[in-house]
Structure formats: structure tokens, C-alpha cells
Length: 253
Ligand code: CA
Image 1 (cartoon, rainbow, N blue to C red):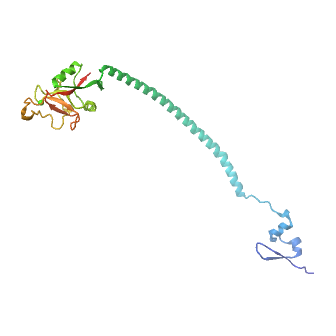
Image 2 (image 1 turned 120 degrees about the horizontal axis):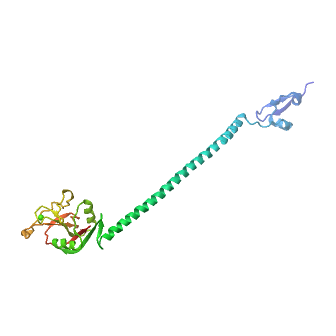
Image 3 (image 1 turned 45 degrees about the horizontal axis):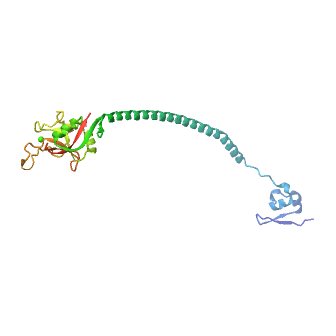
């Protein structure tokens, strides 16, 4: 005798699947049973999710990577730290040596400075181991020369651009220096009788011009050198009448 067909709706396909009662109880293919129907009928048929093989491989690889990489990182970090400690120790030693050396240098310079300072009289300035006095007294050249000798020195003898620069830093107004051509016109000599060298002459413009004054009131001309710190001379030299009254720069050893 033929049995009535049993109909069920499948949510996934929305199509009707036809089963016989016999199929439903015994021989119906399992894969054709919709999930909802199957679940409702027998929970023991639920399948446990299986982790894919590739996931296991990834987990194993990651574990091996961590086991290998972490010790390597720790080792490298320790090595780097050890190297930095060595460098730090060397830098500290070098710094200590530099400090000791600088202290010694400063002490030596201080002693040298004190020795020079004691050597110079009060009010005299020190440059390159020599003492200089910028006098504010106004005298003629001969009087100035003698005044410097009285103070234990001489009118300044300028032997280098460095010495000239030092004088420019401290001088003011017009000052006699120890240079004259009073013995022989044009033969400029320092007070120690050494001739003016070609390498250390610092005349202003077309000086010396041995000017004789308006209406030749100074027929002897200009025979003494002055160092003028005013504009536009700025410490360069001019020849002047020796009987003019000016300040003076004295020098001593
Ligand atoms: Ca002259």
C-alpha cells in the first residue's frame, strides 16, 4: 500500500523536499536533511568543529618563532648594553683626564698671569709679556720720551700688527710713540735707534708728509710720530711737530 508523502520546507533553498515516511525513519540520506530539522530531531548528530590543519601549522610556527626569537633579542640587548657600558666607562675616564689636564692648564696660566701682573706697575696694561702705560699727561715729544724713561720704560715701540691692535683697543686721543726722524729727514727710527721696518709701518694715508705748517711756521717739518685714535685715523700714525703737547704711550719689559 502506498504511503502518503511527507513535506518539509527547507529554509536555505526555499524548496520543498519530499520524503517518504520510510525514508525519514531509516534510509533518508543524511546530507539531504535540513539543519533545522536535523537539529530538532537528534542533538547527538552535531559535529564538533575541527581546527583546520593550516591553523595548527601557523600556531606551531609562531611558537617556534617566539622560542627562537625572544632569546636572540634578549642576547642582542644584553650585548648592546655591555658595549654601551664599556663606552660609558671609557668616556668617564677621558672626561676625568680632561678635567685634570684643564685644571693644570688653568693653574699654569694663572701663575703666568700673576707673574706678569706683579711685573707691571699699577695702572699699566699687560700684552704679550710687556707692560704699557697710557698716560693722560700732555707733553711734547722729548718730555714724553724722558717721562717714560723716568717711569722705568720708554716711548712705545710697535713691532707687529698684533701689538698695534692691542694699543688701538686701549688708546684714546693723540699720543706720542717712540718714533722720530729728527736726526735725518725720512730716516724713521725708534727710540732704541732701530730703523722702522717695512713690515711694521702703519702710517695713515699719505703720511708722513713732513708738513711745515701754514706759512712755513715750522721749517723743520714734522719729525715725531703720533698715534691718533680719533676718526678717521683709528690708531694709524701721523708725523707731527715735536713741540706739540700730546698724551703718550710708554712701554716696559
Ligand atoms: Ca719728518
